[in-house]
Image 1 (cartoon, rainbow, N blue to C red):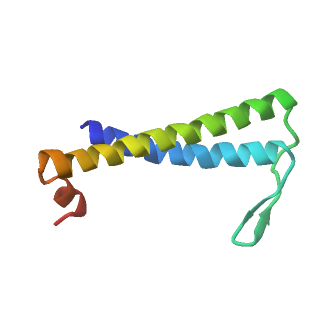
Image 2 (image 1 turned 45 degrees about the vertical axis):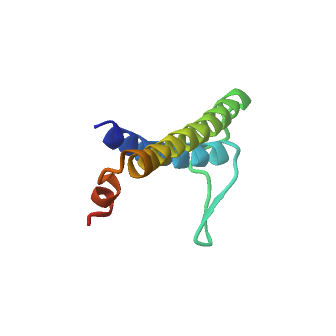
Length: 94
C-alpha cells in the first residue's frame, strides 16, 4: 500500500511540477514552446512576490520528486537484493 501511494504521489507531483513551471513562465510574461508551437501567456504578468513563490514551489517540488523517486528505487533494490522476494517480477508483470 505504501509503494502504491508513493507511485501515485510521484505522478501527481510530476503533473504539479509541469503546472508550476507553466505558471512561473507565463507569470513572467514568457511564451512556452511545445513541439515548436509557441503558447503565449493567457493572462498578464504576476507580481514579483507571486513569481518568486511559484519559483520556490517549483524548485522544492522538483527536489521532493527526486527524493521520493530515489527512495522508491532504493526500496525496490532492497526487495530484490536483500529480501529476494518477487516484487520486481510483480512490477514487470511476469
